[in-house]
Amino acid sequence: MNRIFSGIQPTGHLHLGNYLGAIRNWVKLQEEFECLFCVVDMHAITVWQEPAELVTNTRRIAAAMIAAGIDPERNVVFHQSGVPGHAQLAWIFNCVARLGWLNRMTQFKEKAGKNRENASVGLYAYPNLMAADILLYKATHVPVGEDQKQHLELARDIAQKFNNDYGVHCFPIVEPLIFGPATRVMSLRDGKAKMSKSDPSDYSRINLTDDAEAIRLKIRKARTDPEPLPEAPDGLEARPEAANLIGIYAALADITVEDVCARFAGQPFSRFKDELAQVAVATLAPMTAEMRRLEADPAHIDAILNRGAERAATLAEPVLREVHQIVGFLPPQ
Ligand code: ATP
Ligand code: MG
Image 1 (cartoon, rainbow, N blue to C red):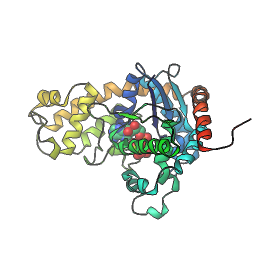
Image 2: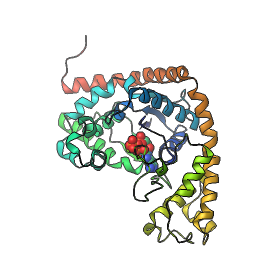
Image 3: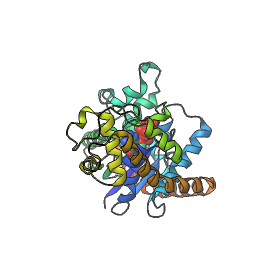
Image 4: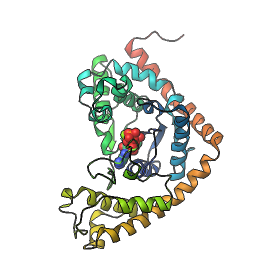
């Protein structure tokens, strides 16, 4: 049976990139795969989180997943810190992964910024924890946005080195699942930076909690160039902001980028932006309303996550036992 692990951090505001690049695809995956969907709160604290906000954001992510159509009965929906096996396996992987491998990770460089000496050790070791998240359940497939491809490669290297070092076939070599248009949604302010929860500018992203007015305003203010929409996508590489808005429209309307160009060829972006705002609001408004309804009952969300964590721990238990035995940790009595 193919098994999927997927995670999302409870940091800041969930945005359109998280929805189009991750959550929306997960909804489709539940038809074909056994799925674990995890709110990765332990990843979140690799950079400072206000404790009260972390709790609220953890519940918000769960609410967003459920509102988007993920069924917590059919899938395992849980919070990472609810299953101690993630931290346990991550430690073992800290001892498998090489410093040289982590030194190559571009996300660490981006997130640590100039003041690298002051970044947390957790931020540096983040990819090892991500490998543990996946391999704790021997997941075979991981749906990842473009931004996580490098980390997934590292998870494969860790699995391979563990298997080689100990001469076992313990961990599978996980495969990425990458989806169609708008797998990488870019910032509305800069077509070369990805839309991100941690971007300080709220105008850079459409939050899943934004109301219709905010969505319209942000799209109207989104950066573009003075040219109208092209007849075909060729040449869009040189126009990152235009390409981004066209890609977002295609993903929301579930049509190809070619179709969007054909439909709006020659029109100014001001007109196109109105249409884009309309599809964005039509897609997001029902989900936002359902998220609000779910968030009004935090105890219910906590019960779903805790039940999910119990189910996840049951799946992790035999894998951890096997790993401990392979590594040479004393067997339990
Ligand atoms: P942070 O800035 O805190 O890293 P993030 O916006 O990158 O936040 P994550 O929690 O790291 O969000 O990622 C959750 C999921 O959303 C991952 O599967 C990731 O690939 C996907 N994702 C994040 N940003 C984008 C984006 N701009 N376009 C498409 N997918 C994205
Ligand atoms: Mg990220």
